[in-house]
Length: 321
Image 1 (cartoon, helix red, strand yellow):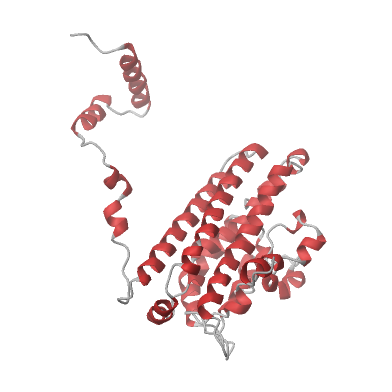
Image 2 (tube, rainbow, N blue to C red):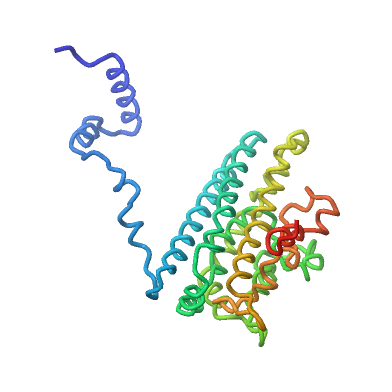
């Protein structure tokens, strides 16, 4: 019987060096490998656990579609945040690396936008309008990961309500002070009284401190700050500029308007629009032309800024080509 091959011996030698540096006993690790069971797909992916996480509140079958799709959405958001973290925590970022990662993030969002037809056309309106009443006051508005993506993508002032943004810009306000004027608060007020909805109060109670801390941590390492530190030549790279513009459109136009298209299908009824589950003012909150939320205004022309989001609405929601 022949002995170990040179390849095996070289790898054992490399492992010996690795564990010697850490003061570890290689034989113990080899024993662990010898006794360990083979890995299975279902254990590695935690398939059984994953498939057990759908717990409808009603007996309507389409509620399970609603739950699964939102869980998929949150996993895609986690992928985006993982890419942003890799960019922001890297010691040195060049244009080539940044472009590759931006393309990944855009790919995730583009998959999400394309898949939103599941929400637009994949449920029976009669079922949705009934089971949604069991979800009060929960709302997709409460997705903290989406807020984290926004915070990590741009300077925090860009997320301040457009009504006070110019007034506050340049005043050297703290993140905590600016957070009081964050754009999404206006979308989570009761339609009649103008008071904070329970949806917003729940969200702020759970996430405000975490989001403020994130914004403070990313003040100098958000995606725009990293782009701004590239060399002038790299900043003029058209593919990279387009990748940033595409992220702006994906997050601030395509994604919210996909929700708007769904809301129009399920909630726009004569003679009065139906409120969202969290009582959010979806008619004002979702359309980008009202919010004028733009991450990278420096990369857009004045005409493009003026028409922000309008062409998508006329094309996708109202069918005007």
